[in-house]
Length: 358
Image (tube, one colour):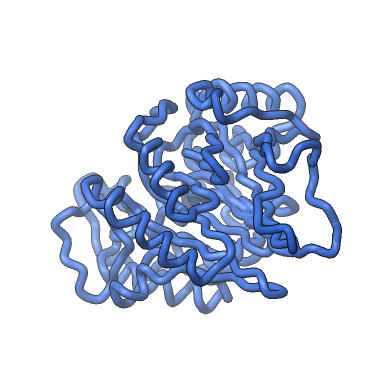
């Protein structure tokens, strides 16, 4: 989370190279996406009494994200309006200059809801970025817009949008800003939404906002990462330092379309407040906790640990631990970060990968 750091703390934070310990995990995927939970602007357009909760990052942040390996930036969240409409427009401008795609906000309502579509060798992956939460409920959107659905509308309106997108792509990923902050428990209404999305054709859901890890559920042919926690964040007490990347591989073959790999890569926010790969006992502890958060899904979801990663067992891929190099086309959705404040995802296509929140 770039937007809450003070100038004097940039040196200890490593503002010039915040992703240097995880860059090898972020690069080389067809899609590496994150939740950018701060506007990028050259000036301040709005301050409030509680200014520590009103974020703004400097323009060079866009270049840092591109250098780290991100390809798609999710911009729909409860802080995207922290610098009003102009902050949304400036963010789009700086991300575009850095050669980054974005989704979730726009210069019109239509653009804000426009999915990101990645195509390679005839395989299409669509990514829809949506927020269920906003901080400024009464703020009118005049020139800067966001893909937002209220609690009452999300179950009614999001599945039809997924179904409409699925008609034009092979795989659909939904990145959703939702959930209770600092709560590991997944609520029944959230599980109900996952069922509706799966029925509509969603293949992967990646959640952000709780600031802590939550469980992973396989429902039907869909995998839901309910929350990836934080990724680049300014404090690490309790379990806030537990983080991870969601790595998903899709395959389109003559026999059909499917997920061939869905795994969680444990990450730890260390004392330097930077994301580090969680190795050894540290990584094992984080994976055990994610498995524990997933106990409510044990009837449909099981895991195995392979090479320090927590893999979701996919019944249709019995015995397959890694994507196969065959004549079929595989795509990775990588999991970079899901907050520049929280989480990460990679989506691979060559295979196709999806990542978390900076």
